[in-house]
Image (cartoon, rainbow, N blue to C red; front, side, top):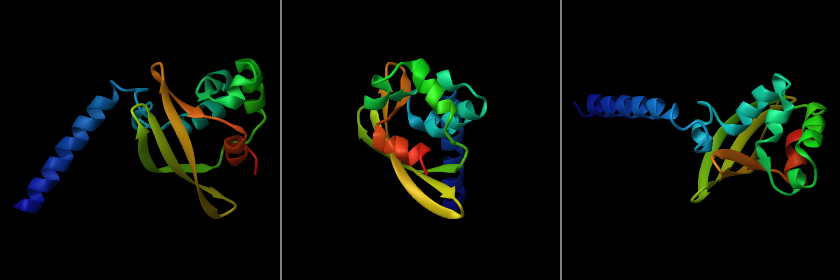
Length: 137
C-alpha cells in the first residue's frame, strides 16, 4: 500500500509540475520552454536564429560588443554537440548554477554555467572563460 501511495503522489506532483511549466516559460532554468536554457539556445543555433540566441547572454563578453556583432560571432561557432543538464543549484534568489554533461569525440565531460533571471528572462553569464568552454575545442 505504501509503494502504491508513493507512486500516486509522484504522479500527481509530476502532473502539477508539467501543468505549471506552461506558466513559467522563462522563470527559471528548469522550465525554459519545457527544456533548459542551453538546450533551447542549441535549437536557436540550429535554426540560425543567432540574434535571438545572443539575447540570452549577459556579462562582460556581451557588454563589450553589440548584439548584432555577438550574433555574427555565434553564427561562426560549433554548438552542435550532445548536451544534457545533470545538475541544478540555486545560488541566490534569482540565480542558479547549472551543471551540464557533454560528449566530445566519445569523451564525457562536465561544465558549469551561471544563470540569472534578468527582467523576466533567464540569461547565461558569458565571459571569456565560458566562451572557451562552450565554443572553442
